[in-house]
Structures are given as structure tokens and as C-alpha cells.
Length: 470
Length: 60
Image (cartoon, chains in turn cyan, green):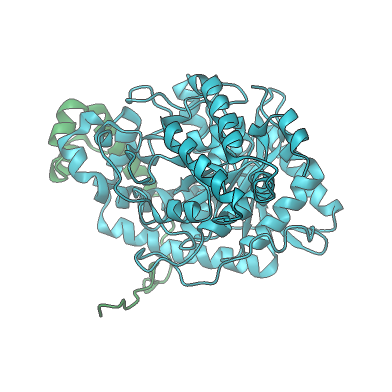
């Protein structure tokens, strides 16, 4: 580990893995690392709006404690001294969980969410709470108490959402890792727009306790990082059964980095072309990016074949009916009594649940079971699926019509409906200098396979070395 | 969705205040709900089970 070289190019772009290694070997001070990130935040956050609440004082205090512990050879865990940002629908004890909404702007969390507690137990240090779309559904809105986060590749562009501050901040080097949540693609969308790595794990693998719900049966907590290895490291810290989360699974979890460097040779990859060629024709640059990923993996020795799944339009409809029905059950009282305290986008996206019948919800869940079977059948033929994430590069944030047009043009919701693990990452850059994206999807609880394929692409392409020009 | 029906459903859901203050948003939400269900293909077998299967918890 050459800490000098890391410092030369800026500690803010040091990976979590490298930082944890350097701290553990007394080559890097957690205080120095935290100060570098706080300086970066001070410089860039007035432009990026990644934070709703920066907790610099507590973060520095924790960094000093981590330094003292490391000096005495007492490491809390594999993330000792590494900064992490938390999406502001996830509870951090002593800080407000506003959900980026006037409705909850005065709320205060009295305990950490389980995922935050696990990160702290692994040694990570919380730097603050991050921008989201209002209640993780609204969209980039200018009628809320806080401005929307912006994309570090071009601050005039949307960073994706709803984990907007998480994506923007990780990409810009404000922190090396962040927690996001994903109900219809909200970890993978900002990962795609900001050119980082975002994973939605298998449903039930990461506890949702302490996370403000959007849709009980579609919500997932996910790690967001700049590299595949960091993502696996973070998942190792947060995965595991929680007996008090009704959706939590008792399935085994653990060493997601074990297969990282096994490469793509001999893997069977199913390419779901109809998503971006037929169901929602993608921008040509996106299509070219996906073809490039596919050919690269072939050259690395993977066997790629075409796979068909139900249409994106139907996946999207099933997601919407379930999501909005469940969200209505959460927001009904507030929408009845305080509709003016929501921003326009959230109000419009939360009220459809009032107009669905019980039969609509059951119909969607009947079709959901068939869709799960369809994806399972596909994954019996191949080891992993390759498909589009976003059909367009990130659009401008100040053009509501463009945001509205491009937002649903994605292939992420299918895997919230089915619960399969899915990872989104950079596939290249557009001619306009914005990230293009690719998505890999795996069998239930086979996140290690996703990381293996994603790492093979990352190493072949050098995508982890690309940073925004900010 | 027919305006009269939309108003009746909104009132049944307790959205009178939203209907008075944000009628366009209520109408947009109703339209969205009406169109999205039509995109779902009903399983051919009426006995098809929904997800998730009912499972006994600790309290049963």
C-alpha cells in the first residue's frame, strides 16, 4: 500500500478497501482521512447538495476514537475508520430522519437502523444524512425544504434517484461508500447516472428495520461504492438475518469477496436484449455500451446467449400497483390531512394507491409469482443475466418534462418485483460525458456471482478509474 | 377516468382536502391508477396463488 501515492491523487478517491487496509496497518490516520473528506465536502457540497445534514463534529470525534483504537491495535472490524454517508430515510441515532420532506423535518431518530448499526460495528464512521427524493419516490424537486442533489459529472444534470445524495457523493469523492434504498431501482438508478457501483441484494438479505418504508415487499437496502470490491466488503458488513424484520431471511450470508477474481471464463451469461431493443428502445449510445460489455465478457471467455423475460411494461405495471398500494397504506393519513406539505411530485406518485382496489393488488401479486418463476427459469439456464439499467444517460435536472420522460425508461423494477439480486455499474461514457450503465442479475442469494462478473467487467474496462471532472 | 367516478373514489379515500387544494394532482393520480392495471396480464388459471405464500409465524 503506497499511501503517499494515494495522498498525491487525493485521499477522497481512495477506496474503502484501501483505506481500511492502510488504517489497519497504521499507514493512514482515520483523522487525516476524515479531514480530507470533510474538506472535499466543504468544497463541493454547495454545488452538489448531497447532504441534508452533515455531522462533521461527530464524524471527527469518531475518527479520533478510531485513531486511538487503531494505535492500540484494536480494530472494530473490516471498515475501521472508513467514512460512510447514509440516505436520509435510514435512521441514525441522534439525527433527524427527514425523508427529504416537510412532513418529517422535525423527526429525530432515537436508535440506529440495523444496517447502520452493523456498519458502525464494522468500524465505519457516519458523516451525515444524504439527499433523497421525497420519501424515496418524489423525484428531483425544487418545492421541498432542501434542494435536490446534483450530478458531479455535470451539476446541471440529474444524479438519478431516489438515493440521489448517495450516488452523487460517492462519485464525487465526498465519502467512499454510502447506503441507499431500492424499491423500484433507487440504488441502481443513481449508480447508473453517476457511474458508480450499486447493488440491490436479494430481498430479505439486508434488514429494513429502522428504514422508513416505501413499499414493504419491494424495499431493499443496498451498498453504493466506487468499486466492486468495496461493494462486496460493504455487503459483508450489512447482510444477515434480523428476527424483528418480518421480511428478513435466514438464508446464509457471508464472504461476498471470495469469488471476486475468478474472472468470466466459462460463465454462462443471458443477455436480455428485448428490454432495451423492443420493450423500451434505448438511446443508441446505451445500446452500444451494452454490446461492448457483452463482447468484452465473451472475449474473457463467457458464453453469452439471448434470454427472454416478461415485458418491461408489464414488470413496471406490477411494480407500480404493489408499490403505490403499499405506499398508500403508509401515507394515507398525511395525504388526507396535510397534502400541501408534500412536494408536487411525491403527492402525485403517492396518491394513485387510493384508486386501486384490493383485487388489483392481489392480481399484481399473482402475476408477481409467475414473474419470479420466469426469472428463476432463465437463471436455471445461465449463471447471470446481463441487461440495461437506464435507457438514457442522465438528463438535465431543470427540465421536468425530460425527467418525467426518462425516469420510467429503465430495466430495474423487474428485480424489485422478483427479489433477485441486481447490480448496476458504469458501462462507459456518452459523447456528452455522462455515464452509461449496465446491469447484472443473479440467482437468489448468489451475490458472489454478481460481484465476480461485475469485477471481470470492471477490471477489463478500468471503469473504477474514471471519476467525474469536478 | 370519468370525473364523477374519480371524485367519488377520492372522497371515499378521504382525499377531500387534496381534491379541493390540488385537483390536478388527484386527477393525475387517478388516471395513472386506471391505466396501469390494464397492463397486467391476468394469470390464465384462476387458482393461481399470489406472492408471498402465507406462512405461519411464531404467533400462530
